[in-house]
View 1 (cartoon, rainbow, N blue to C red):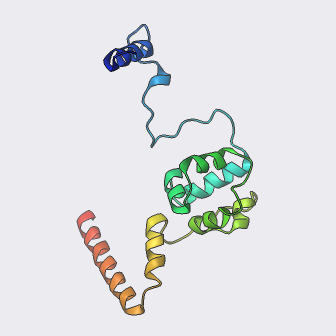
View 2 (cartoon, rainbow, N blue to C red; view 1 turned 60 degrees about the horizontal axis):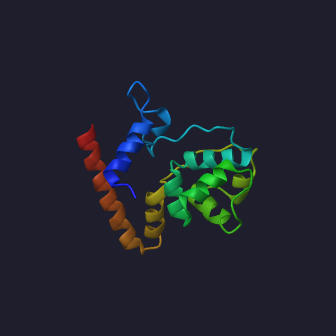
View 3 (tube, rainbow, N blue to C red; view 1 turned 30 degrees about the horizontal axis):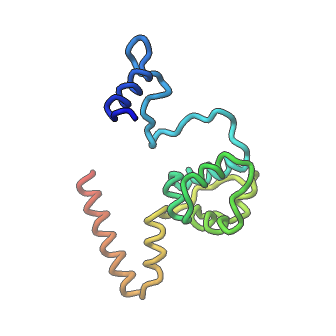
Amino acid sequence: MCHPNITSTLVTMQALKPSGRPREETWPYDAAMPRPLSKSRPRQGARLAELRRAAHLSQAALARLIGESQQNVAYWEQSEKPPRSDVLPKLAHVLGVSVEQILDVKTPIARRSGPVGKVRKLFEDVSELPRRQQDKVVELVSALVQQYRRHAG
C-alpha cells in the first residue's frame, strides 16, 4: 500500500505533459461549467433541458425541487425516453408547464412570468396564508426590494 503523499505525487506526475503543463483531461472540472456534449442530444432530452433553462434552474436545483437526484435529471436530458410517469407532474409544476408541453417537442416554449425555483415555492406557501399575513409578507418584500433598488441604482 502506497503512502498518500507518494500516491498524489505519482498521479500528479502522470497528469503532466512533457512540457510540465497538466493534460487537458485532468484539469479540474468546474460544476458551473457544463461539459461539452460528445453527441447531439435527443429531441426529448433537448426539450427537457430547454424547459429547465427557460425556468432558470440548474440540473441540481431542478432535482432538489422534484425530489430526484441530479444524475436522474442529467440522464433524462441525454435520453430519448421521457421521465417516469410519477415524476412528470412534479416536473410540469416546477417548470411551470403542462405535462403535454414536456412530452410534445413541437410546442414552442414560452418564458413564464413570475418567480422561479425557491422564490416560487415560497410565494405558493405564502398564498395559503390568511390575507392579513399575505399583506404583511408583501409589505416586507416590497420594502426589501425598494431598499435594494436604492442601493443598487
